[in-house]
Image (cartoon, rainbow, N blue to C red; front, side, top):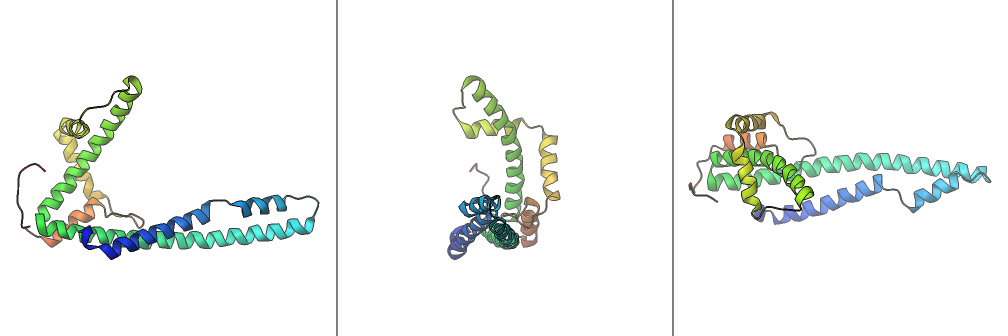
Length: 195
């Protein structure tokens, strides 16, 4: 699905760089800030200190305005990115079917939970023995398979409780599953073989 979104992917790249610029301008101090701070603390000249204070206030107000523009840009960017994900999901649904997308979302949630536990153990093993597994996918899969059925079911059940946030770049699994169910597509490829 994403391969059909050439223009949107390029625009997303540009928008993310503009958002990064906004964040840098809003939060990162530069040489001008340092200069105004030094000028404002100069005890010899009250007039210069006063002008520096006014300039610092103007910079602060402009940063507040830029912060709002940054938040609006991040919200618009998040919305556009989520729409691109829905479009990519639509391609998956047409090919593999609505049930397949739902199953992959559920399986991904279980694998992510297993990876969290596995990564903690992996870090501890590395810190203790400087040893890593030979087959990382098999290592993660072993952790996923070791999760009790009731834990896997609880993880899958919690998927429906999460909603997409305004600044999220991807829809929540619940929203993706709901969208797939509404599409109700049977798909054109049906295989039970491992990936």
